[in-house]
Amino acid sequence: MLRGRISTRIDDKGRLKVPSAFRAHIEAEYGPALYMTSLSPTGEYVRLYPLKVWEAIEEKLRGVPQMNQSRKSFEMTTSYWGQLVEFDAQGRVVIPPPLREAAGASAEVDVLGLQNCLDIWNSDRLRSKVLSDGLNDTHLTDLAALGI
Image 1: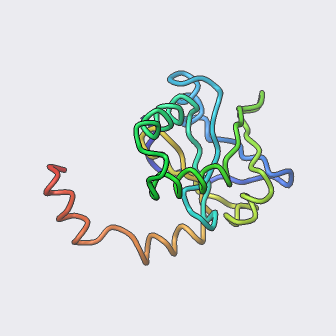
Image 2 (image 1 turned 30 degrees about the vertical axis):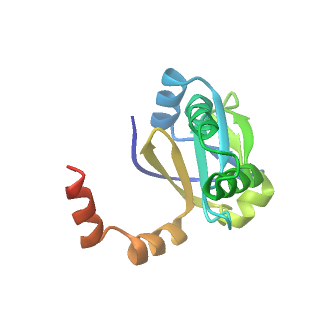
């Protein structure tokens, strides 16, 4: 399982060296193929799915009518930012320039393990997001109602 936060850097060529603990789990559990996208219409952050996880999401989407607005918006956003990628020999992935620029992912970034995928955030942007939109009492109440 992918969990926790690891700070790292993106080099001048836009390559992210995926932290070894995350990379080892992904390669062992899912293989080297990945789908890189963002769930944010503005590309606020990068989402990195093992391709097998992404394909399971696509399979679920096939069960939703094509004219469903939520499906259309999800597919439009994830396709706009999306690209198939693989780890290189050094365990790096290239973040395409448009997504890298939108996410502000040019130097220091935080990689978050979210069970079966990774989020890559500009470190300053993530800290601001956690402080402004992070976990609150309403979220805790909602999660308690779900048994968490």
